[in-house]
Length: 291
Image 1 (cartoon, rainbow, N blue to C red):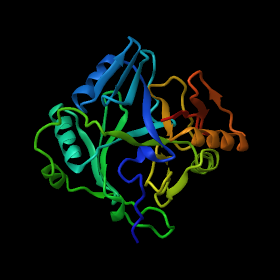
Image 2: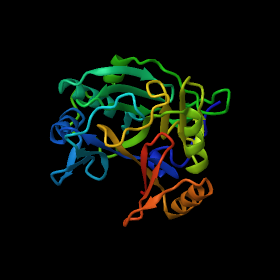
Image 3: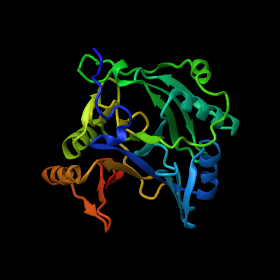
Image 4: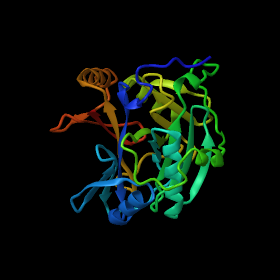
């Protein structure tokens, strides 16, 4: 049966807790910023010499921290991919054309029933997903009552036909980080943390070695897998994910999140801007901010 639509169908950022920008430790931040500008059309919002913020004209999507001594740790807990959610299928098509013309190579293309997605990597090996969602009234439920997802072959030619046939001029203004997919050490520990301590709902539990959680009935704001990282925690200061950002819809959600963290006896800190800092069981750092 279809998943009922909700007032937040158009943009998942209105969910109580959703995904925000990812911060990456980059061995060569200026060069990496060039990739995100040229291949993905992200705007360079600020550059203070050590940190480069890229995204739409209104919001950060990827933040690069220049860390020349950072070493790769591809099998440790951390980023599997950051997923940029495009407003329309045509926008996704034009983004794929732009990436191709910039020389970016696709790692894969999948129809997930709820979405259509392509995958690639930036020059430092960070995973990226570009996707568009189908309308929620097209989503189906699985046998456990969650969202039915699959990994099917994507008709890439059909997707491209929906676009202009030209490279996008830049990332569309309504593009957001739709979800962040993390490599983790242990699925059971991650499930307890993200559901009990943070309040996410389990949405998809049918993929071997993986779990997908969200709020507001979305298919997933956070993906978790142990395909490469089982038993391995994050390496502090390594190249790749520095922290992932979770967006709290309002102050009431922030208050409830603090109550959950305290009840679960999960340590957290608070910075001068009110952002909450917390570490998940695999050592992945999260920054929770009111959107």
